[in-house]
Length: 445
Image (cartoon, rainbow, N blue to C red; front, side):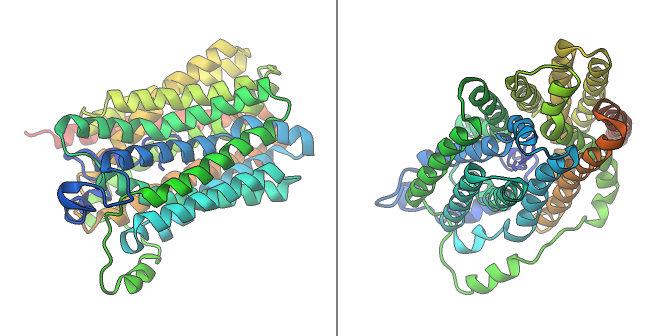
């Protein structure tokens, strides 16, 4: 959840994997020749490249943690202001849609104006979003806060993704560590944010303000620290014109990759739709269906899903992409089935078990889908292809959750979640079949 504001591995995983280069992999050689100082040492007044790498990794965790922080708080907001489940899911969905817009427009801007200015601007915008949460007194400010947060996260994702490749230390052992960080940081951050917010709900009297005071301070400090980041993007003639051109939204699938992309679509929709259900309505389900009044549980559910996804993506990262996608889709179907059984029986332990199994399926299935597509695109095609992947993913992350919120008023929370989950199971099983078919077709005769 990247990059990327979702709860799956970002394309960074691919970029750090020489067998399946992602969007920024093509930048590595170019960036390597523009290090600040001899032999890759930092310029005066800058931190080292290794320190810069870890600063970016921590920044990625912070953005992802902030994106999941509101999930355990949604029930509190709903109780305080009395809005419907449809409004709740709209607050959730606006983040994903804003993030998608930012990815499609400013995702490549740091290639032209530099990593530092884009990251500083994104971090200050994120700090502004935290202040908007802090001072929100109704649904309107809440929607504004989530929209600004989505734009900031989307703008930062491209710069962080490229920067982690630019600054990755050169030894083989450390590069393996880089792949591990890239795989686990997004979903690990999502887990930390949901769990941390749940702890604030449990142990503080002002959880909807204190957690955002802390996050505001974190993002202001990170913005200041970015001034020390080594800048691998050197000024070049015409970069202002190129920067304007890069803002034009681009998405597309190369002709030779369309079959694989079509086969991956059910997997993309199933994984991200399930993530959207947990992050938007997870707290409502634990309170309204499982009858658990402790709001910490809502954070624990999201943390269980995303942490399991992080562990699974790291565990299977070296296995065949088609097999990983198929196996992950089967696990997602099984985990969703357990979730539906838990809701029918009002069983909290079974609900957590379903979250863990679904999370394992989520992380591995999405990683397998990304790697299977990355191998089919040339350097000049990857940006448009991954834009298409994330268009499908973020629409699946937000639109079904919004529709579910609208349906709650007529169907009820339990029935809506059941219909939603059944749809995810069908798509996940279809994705497993298509993944196995393509895996067999790819084997040498």
